[in-house]
Image (cartoon, rainbow over all chains, first blue to last red):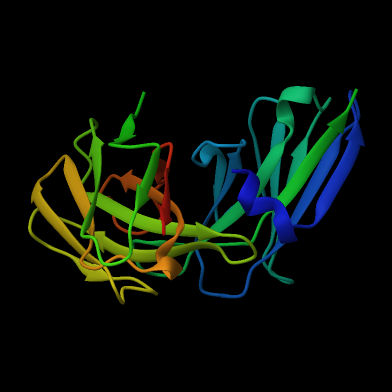
Length: 111
Length: 114
């Protein structure tokens, strides 16, 4: 929600451009990663996931890239739309049933 | 579609009150979770449950307890609410296929403790 965004890095893009949101993770043993989107006043919504045996996975207008060497995850959104404006979180599975979440990035799409 | 519902969107309580937050999921998921979300701190795990009547502490369990009497319902209890428990509370559920399963979230409950 809105209160999440007070200390978040912000990415501002023009409508129609591609967006790239980055995430660094800490645990080299993590084997599963998820990207979530959170719109103001709502709970996080699943976007796409990837397992550690993959480098890339594509969905509808979204692509997740995983670089295990540098422990880096990115979310690419093609042809960004105003409805994509939200806070985006990466999450990693660190060996237990619960996930560990990143602090999030706010995406602002300018018309 | 997975649906996770939370009993209230907004709650206002006074210091010292006992507070119940209810969460229900309709997908027969084994695992259920309670998080709180605060500015600059992201989502932090309070408790989770991997079966009926089973519970496990998360990263910040102090001041909270949970109850899982039925598979579809997971309750978060603040025994004596304090102002530092003012936060957004998020419930989630996932299937039990070991590690690496997607969690689905409810809409959240924004709690204000006065």
